[in-house]
Length: 114
Image (cartoon, rainbow, N blue to C red):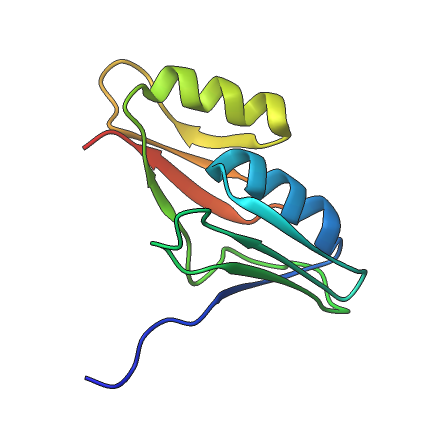
């Protein structure tokens, strides 16, 4: 196979805000950027870096691609993400195995314990 993921790119309005949120959420290094582009990267270089690209339109519907994040302690991670600026979309009680959340610009992602 000759293809591999080079970057995961997220369209957004505020590149620096989302880069800050996701670098803290994932423990990635904030590589910096400007109003048009920002980048964060896995300090161990195991996972692909994430780019944040400013676009003129706002998010209008559910994303067609989202991240599923595995957490050892869902309750703790959900609380930490809420403190960073995420919101809970739905899910999570003792019987749930995942919760749908949204980053500060409304991009959905899941936190689960597998």
